[in-house]
Length: 304
Image (cartoon, rainbow, N blue to C red; front, top):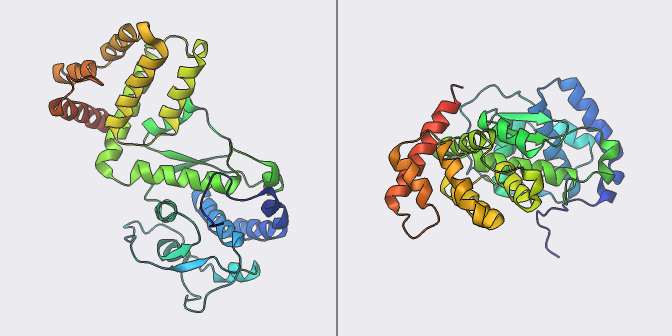
């Protein structure tokens, strides 16, 4: 069976088998005294390599542009890799820095989008908050309104064999968070518009536009997914928000959506676009109006 990135990426036996290796990594990380995001990227890369200890190397690529940030710590990862008995390919320089390793070296079978995010997180181009717990959707919404994403990481590796995040094992979950970061930050214009959408939702939620969510668990589940686990184009996010409101509140949905619109201090064009969302009357000018609104709200997020 082909090895691919999937929710259950590493079996519990992987985390049991490599406890001694984790202790070696933990000691090295403590000696480095890095910031938490840099530590997590080192852990993530090394566990991905341990997972295929003798054949992790997929080649070298220069598709990812160098980060303009120069604050990433310089570290030559070869010595630590040797301590872990991970094979090192002859064609790869032993002096390669960890930043350059993340940028150019492909690890089987990690998605390119995950490794790109790891490089930009390590070089601190992407602002990340590391938490040692899984935040609630509302907490993550607030973090996204502040222009950040999170990685959930706690180096209690003795617990990793039994630790699950939904269907995901620890390494899968760290990589999943990295992929979300890439979708959030990679395109500056879309990033600002996503900020605007999350601010829009946060303001509408604070104004109690939707009835008590706990009384409608189906809507609460879809709403929580939208605000915490669905980094996408803002127009798609708006359409999804309107759709789940219509589906789960049915005859109440019109009055609820009116409250959502009223909570937004938008222009006449923007408010009309919100009213026509998901109807045959929604046209290109309405798309432009919503994108303009999200950019405006996103710009406000930088200063609030």
